[in-house]
Image (cartoon, rainbow, N blue to C red):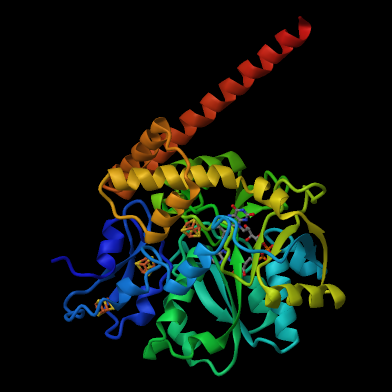
Length: 443
Ligand SMILES: Cc1cc2nc3c(=O)[nH]c(=O)nc-3n(C[C@H](O)[C@H](O)[C@H](O)COP(=O)(O)OP(=O)(O)OC[C@H]3O[C@@H](n4cnc5c(N)ncnc54)[C@H](O)[C@@H]3O)c2cc1C
Ligand code: SF4
Ligand code: SF4
Ligand code: SF4
């Protein structure tokens, strides 16, 4: 019989690198490594893991979310949308925070507000750093406003945020956690397990702040950026820099120690088409519904600042709603109420539903396991499967897995070729359409 541990999760392409398996392992047998295509995946040292306690598998949100969350989901009208109190768009009133932010700076302003009010003394955030001259991310507990500001901007590469859950457990003060939905699922699984290794986790986490997430790139993106910019040692990286071009079509700002290089946003879109991990394509929780507050970009909402950006704020429960009210009253943020359905349309949730359903079917037909929650969602959504879309999903997964068998250099060459081809093709399409429109208007 196969051992029930996270190797099964990794082998079934279900790992999203959240890191929850690490703190639950009582013998420290799990470590992380990049594979060829640049996923960041856990692997077990079987010389150390000799009894196979199965705990890592049981807390793994890649395969399952806990019973409490499943029950919550089963009472929702639509698991893709979750519950809401209020939806707002707004921005941080502190000019430094707003200037340095990915969107409107609401995440950072909220953390610093809570710190100043002494409701929290730290925040689990993600910083971009250069280790051995390779750009990577680092999850850490920031304890000063400056450290929180240093973590601003979205990092679109895997981050095993929860590997430091044991550190949080040992703190003698409360913190807030900022995470993608896969991080929040992992955190909830860990809390729900109530294991002796992490028994204080729940009481040390005062707030859960979620980022809306449509997926990320593998680490191959970093090599792509290095090659494009000819900056071999990336010192800092702003994946979407609203100060270069504008908020909507923000360029990627690749920084070396002495120079920088700006890459047009269409390269990022292409990277997403090629190296977004298949696991992200079966992730139902784009809107981060289990957080106290979800934050994102106000896409599709009337009147947002298209040059410098704003934040989308979705309060999910009383606690989150009360906090936003207090920040408004205290003048820490400026925000106005908008409609949730407008936000959901702007996030293209119908497209996401179709992607999740077709990729889930593709996973099954390729012989991979799927998370229980996907089984549940498919039944509830009752959407017809389109054979062509399912075939495309199968092809995507197979190409991704085949690519992973090549070495990194060959993978990057493939990505470069494909992106150049697609960009030229898109340009030709654009010119033809423009010409056709001119001809049509003349007649
Ligand atoms: C991978 C990814 C995909 C996203 N996809 C969407 C999307 O499809 N639609 C949408 O509306 N918004 C998306 N977002 C959210 C959006 O990019 C902003 O993060 C959000 O609007 C908050 O902006 P802010 O100005 O308030 O944040 P800032 O003040 O700039 O602070 C950013 C915060 O995000 C945290 N953070 C950054 N990267 C990560 C990471 N990889 N994992 C965990 N925490 C991180 C930092 O620790 C920091 O606390 C995505 C974010 C990420 C990281
Ligand atoms: S099965 Fe148990 S001992 Fe083995 S890696 Fe998983 S948590 Fe650790
Ligand atoms: S717990 Fe997270 S990092 Fe570990 S195998 Fe599961 S999804 Fe991957
Ligand atoms: S799409 Fe889902 S699984 Fe992928 S990074 Fe985002 S939250 Fe995690």
